[in-house]
Image (cartoon, rainbow, N blue to C red; front, side, top):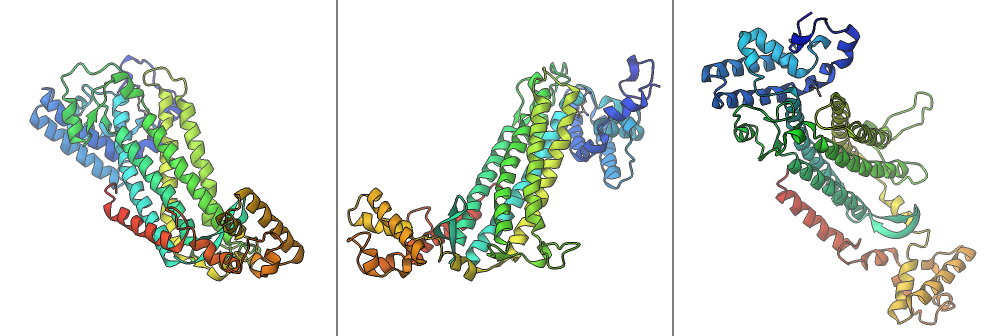
Amino acid sequence: MKNKAWSGRFKEGTDKLVEEFNASISFDKRLYRHDIQGSIAHAQTLVKAGILTESESKKIIKGLKTVEKEISEGKIEFTSAMEDIHMAVEMRLTELVGPLGGKLHTGRSRNDQVALDIRLYLREEIFAILDLIHDFKKALVEVAEKHIDCIMPGYTHLQRAQPVLLSHHLLAYYEMFQRDTGRLVDCLIRMDAMPLGAGALAGSPYKLDRKLTAKALNFSEITANSLDSVSDRDFAIEFISAASILMMHFSRLSEEIILWSSQEFAFIELSDAFSTGSSIMPQKKNPDVAELARGKTGRVYGNLMSLLTTMKSLPLAYNKDMQEDKEPLFDTIDTVKVILKVYGPMLKTMRVKSDAMFKATGAGFLNATDAADYLTKKGLPFREAHHAVGSAVAYCVENNKTLEELELDEWQKFSKLFEADIKKTVSIKNSLNTRKIYGGTALETVKKRLEEVKKEFEQCGCC
Ligand code: ARG
């Protein structure tokens, strides 16, 4: 059986099981547009190298465009015998243009071809993901603005700690996703090098103008070492790392959405369109979207581990192990995209129960630090102030009172420095609005930050 492009030195056909096992077509078919884009650029470079005539190149390019159309219309049935997308495209091209199709692979190997295809594909997907992050950040900002003055407990150790604005809390996530944007842009910068010309591993013996190919494919640079060009998958690992961090952020937000929508917190209610029910318990309204986002974080971490482990200890240069790069990469892209799409609308349609949030600041002594700061401002060392207010809190616990409810004579049991204005100091709104420091939760500070964030959106050139 001599029907394979590489079958010249083989006397026997491939075992059926091996054919199935070896094939990547079932998943790498999604690279077809990028494979064809790379081949078109290569066909043009082959003209300059004197390997193809202008008219041969035109015929090949026309054929490649036909193949692209056929694939996009689902007219090509992919089989394991085709092995991978590179072979499948070349096979169909040769059917269309005859033996001329066989000239396209001159000076090229599937090793540099696949390295190029993944870069082209991933670059496009990162741009799409950046757009989706942009939309999601916008949704965060919109919800923050809508509830700009909604006060809620801020937590440490999941214990009520100090009052914060819900808008401040949401803008904390804006900062995280802003850094995610930066990481992905960074990843794009490092993968902006064109590998064709590396050949199988040692570099092509033909006079291929690599810079011309790079220009045609919109790369700023060409890779500098042929061995590295065909065996580097750092860019994919880097992308999945950035995606893992992004998912970690989603898992934290999800955990809060899940907690806040529970009856124990009852801070928010998700809209019906973004919740699901139970097949047995008629009363249930579950936050499945947030739970799935939290759950799929594990899946993306798994993809990162998978690719890191595949690449671990691989000798230079290309090894077939590297065909295993695609599924974790594709799965990561699909997962991140769907979560980014669904999450913004979920946040925008949730009902914020601002009364419940504010009410929750009434218990838990969230203003205790303010009382300590009051004493400190009067000259008491902070540690002594901390102790005095700690005793006042213990007194309140014993007498079932809040700090706001203490009378001046009660305050003075703990320090003679307390005066009538302590009442105002320990009001929740006062506690919040004294935190005017840049980065703090005071209403006017958060409003200013919101304005800055909106300007960042206007200036954003990345997406
Ligand atoms: N399907 C292969 C992959 O994704 C393409 C490269 C194959 N190269 C080879 N020398 N067999 O890795």
